[in-house]
Image (spheres, rainbow, N blue to C red):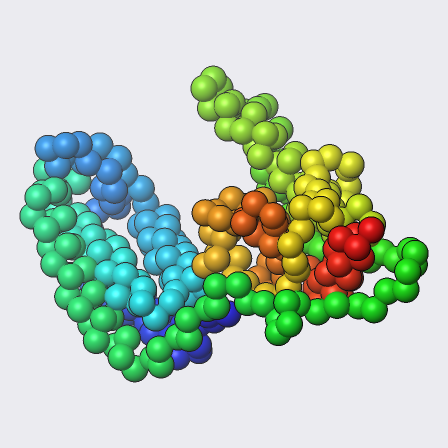
Amino acid sequence: MNRATPRLRALAALPFVLALAVHLLLFARWRDELPDELAIHFSAGGEADGWTGPTAYVLVSTALLLGLAAGWTALVRRRDLWAAWVTAGFAGGLLVQLLRANRVDDAFTAVVFAPGMDLGVALVVAAVAGAAGWALGSLVPAEAEPSVHGEDPAGGPRLPLAAGEAVGWSKDTGSRALTVLAVLALAAAPVTLLVATWPGALFGLLGLVVGVPGLALARVRVSVDRHGLTVRSALVPRPRVRVPLDGVEGASVREIDAVADFGGWGYRVRAHRTGVVMRSGEALVVRRGSGREFAVTVRDARTAAALLNALVERHGKV
C-alpha cells in the first residue's frame, strides 16, 4: 500500500507553516495600521460589504491554513506534493493581499480589494510555490506501484475443511471518522431546527438525513458462512451486502488506503470495485463472477479469506 513517509508529510506541511508564519508576522507588523473591523467580504467591484474583528480574523485564517495543512499531510502522495504547495501559496498569498487591502483608514467605505490584481498576485505566489514543491518532490523516494489484485500465491489462502463440516467466521469493525461525523450531524440537527429560520432549517433536516444512516453504517458485522459473505450494520438488520458462494471466484487479503483507493469511508463505489471501507489497513477482497471486486476492511481478514475460499471450493464440488 502507498503510505506517505514522514519526510513526505513534513514537506506537505511545510508550505502551510511558512504561509501561516508570514501571515501572522505581517499581521503583527501592520496591526496599528489595520482598522478595528477588518473587511473580509467584497462585492464584484472590490467594495467591502462584510467585516469581522481582528481576533476572529486571526483565528479563522489560522484555522484555515492549519486545516488545509492537516488535510494535505494526511492525504499527500509524492506525485501530488506540488499541489499541496500550490494550495498553500494561493491561500497564503490571498490572506496577505487581504491584510494589505485593509491598511486603510475607513474599510467600510473604501474600495479595498482589487480582484484582478490581488487574485493575480496570489496565483503568481501559488505558481512559484508549486515549482518549489515539484523540485522538493525529488527528495522523496518514488512510491512502489500497488498491485492490481494483491492476491496471495496459489489463488489466496485456504482452510482445510472436512466434508459436511459446519463452520463460520464473524467479526465487527467500525469507523471512528464516520461515528464522529454522524454524532456531530445528529447533535447539530435539533439545535439548527430550533433556532434557524427557513431555509436555514433545511440544514437541520440534512443533519438527520446524514446522521441516521451514517451512524447505522459506522459499525458493521462481517460474516463468512455457508451462505457466502455478508456485511451488515451491527446495529440494525439493514442495510446489508451479501455475496453468495456461487458469486465468488476467489478471496484474498489486501492493504488498502481508504482515501487513495476508495475516496473515503463508508459504502464506496469505484470503477470495477465496490467496498465497505471503515478505515485504512487490512481488507478482505472478493473477486466476483462479474469481474468486479468487493472489499471490506476488517481485522483477521486472512482467516475470512481462507474460509471463504474453502467454502467456495467445497460448494463447487457439490
